[in-house]
Length: 230
Image (cartoon, rainbow, N blue to C red):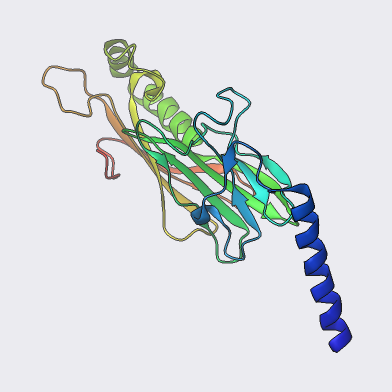
């Protein structure tokens, strides 16, 4: 028993010395917020520091192994910085066993990023961009269900910016516990402020992410949605 404990202590000391010898395991220009850590502290998420990390397309939030500083992979979505004009990085949501991570970056009106990652055997097994999947699913079904109204609303809202896909306001949120299936609600409107005489088209969609990371639509309807933003 004492030999077993001695081996464990030696291993911990070795890892600590190795990290100390290499310096801070977090890459320069980044930080790892405490509220991004997995329940056991094994993983965290890197967040670039404004004016210290390069502001390029190659700068991402990434999952990092805290003991070694090993980057396990980039989160493939809009990057959240330590300071942002609107919104910002929200506390990471982890499943109790640390196998699922829901990463969210908020924006002024909608999420900038909403990504589900599956951790397995010390690596990222897969990741699903829930925000993009929800947006694409509801846009395609709304266009098919009401093509004339869709075209009119798209034309009226042209130039609204990248936060408004096809000119529409689309809100994507998850519901319930962080487990499979992960339930998702999506709401769409062309007129979020209910401005009179503006083209108005609304729809809502329910879906889920299964254990393979697939986004599956379970229901779709024209009409006002059920999310909090509109």
